[in-house]
Length: 395
Image 1 (cartoon, rainbow, N blue to C red):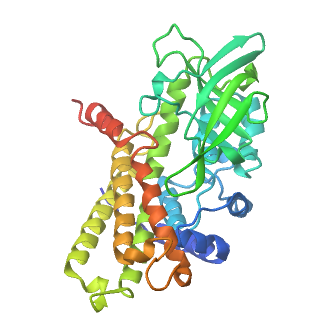
Image 2 (cartoon, one colour):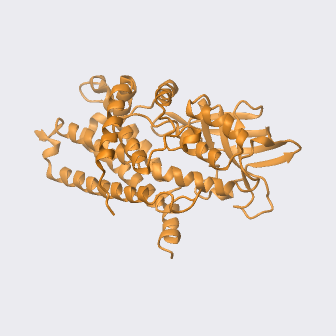
Image 3 (tube, rainbow, N blue to C red):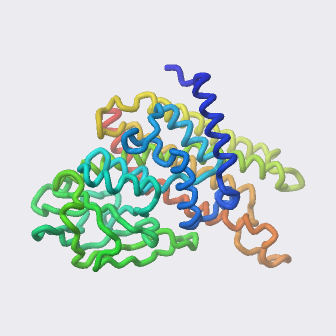
């Protein structure tokens, strides 16, 4: 299998890289380089820049606004975007519910929602996890009872990322409590302005408000908001999570972080010499780079096999990408912490008081703590190992 790029693909990479260099807003790029959280305006503004270019939903079918790019071109685009660095289009719309809608929804749903997702006219969030139903998602208890032309939803979702901004939420709800747990779930689209919805913030360990609890108290949702068939939602959720796990590898993010680590390690001194000259540090850095190269080659193999598993069926190898990608992301934040050392703390309680002169370093510790989550969301790494054991190794 030849995993090198062709001349045409290298030219495409140059085109994409030039676009990012010239069009990513400077303030957005700086926030990402410093590990700061982006605001809603940052994300909306950037996605609309991409949509104007025709690049907001590049992996969608052409009839729904996609580019028709090959899987390799799509891979190159994502890597260059991560290395720019630039934010990805809002994943809850573009990479999660969008593909579910164009693959399984009816024509009226496609016509209404897909253009609005591309231009981020609607902000989406994900209603999957619940208290007690995270890795074992099929045990969810939020129920949707059909009463005439509406579903009445009651229950609670948790860890709902950026729900404070959301216009819509796509929910897994139990519609047949008598069925086996995977067979009685439906995929329903819910307007967040509906009566009976309450969003309550959860403050994370890094001090930010990124995730939320969402409560449903007799929320009425039109039956027309059901995606696909009733009680088939588990199939659609597996399709969605397969897409999410491939993206979680984030090879470009780790490449950009390693570049930044090397840059800083050449400047920051320890024991009178730059940290990059420390043999033990170089060994750690080299080990992560080797792991990242192996991950990159594995992802290229998955890209080369794309579409061979049938429509709506994710490649089980995406679980490998999820595991190694999340481990490497965590390893790079650990290396960054090692480079900066005590300056990673928000305040320096020694002779200088606060470290306002190095304000950007205050984001390194929060980034380290925030990245502990990547081995959990999108299906915990323990669950991914079970998938690999059954679907890849056949054990």
